[in-house]
View 1: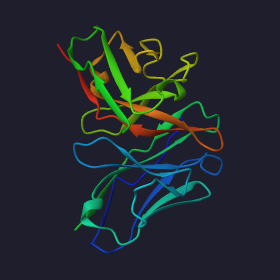
View 2: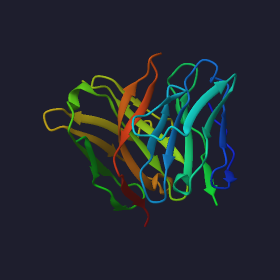
View 3: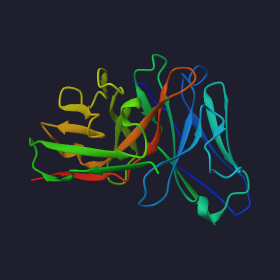
View 4: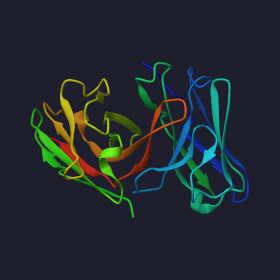
Length: 108
Length: 122
């Protein structure tokens, strides 16, 4: 089965740049999406189609893909950005919809 | 305002059945594909099932295929998930999400409800 691999945790100080990676064999051909989930809340779409920021999401959030790795970058991370971040994509057939294991972002 | 509200969660015994509902408002429900995504306590997200806007096409994740059935009633703006032969590892918060088709034809979860908790335990 298809898998997306993320680091379990990333930690930065406020104002620093946080980078969360997601690796998957189909990413050269499929978009990566990024969801933010704060404690006790539902996930929220942050980045879609690899690098498009959803309306209402701060400009400090950006997405990129190079080869089999997608990256969510938070430039100047804020304390309110803390939470779990999940990448999402599909396998090459598009039939299997998969999330990465999630990355816990700590900003302190 | 777009709203997605799940209901129907609760405690059920192993082997039992449960039906979840998802009431949508603020958009033309029948024009959108919909999906269910679940999250076990303290764990990550897992796609469960999806259905086309008309209801003609249904899709399932491997872990629920043959046990869960997704359906919709566009006259009531409501999505359903009928769950049977429930197991302890089905325990999770079940989220209803509006599906959206990307430029290259793949689908992603655009908007999410707050979820409903299903606990499978004796």
